[in-house]
Length: 99
Image (cartoon, rainbow, N blue to C red; front, side, top):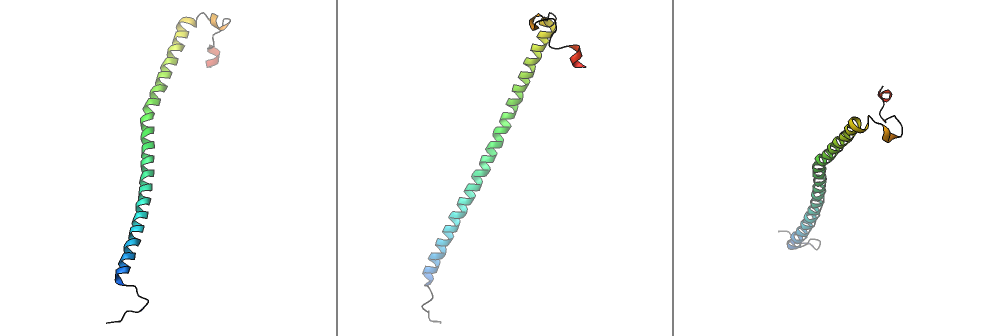
């Protein structure tokens, strides 16, 4: 058997140091994983909000298009023939503008 020298630590202290080091590394790794998982969750939440918002925006656009269409049709079939409301005889839509 080899006699222990003064440089060596007792075996018990080596295990204690290794356990502490392992705990520190594990805690640091858990912290990094937690941060990365939180970032992924935030990105997924953002994508979900965009996915939920897209149909709403499309619906709003469709409503606007139909409302505008109705206003133009009302003007064409009712007020557009008179042209009085535009200060003269010329409505804002003329055949020359379309060519």
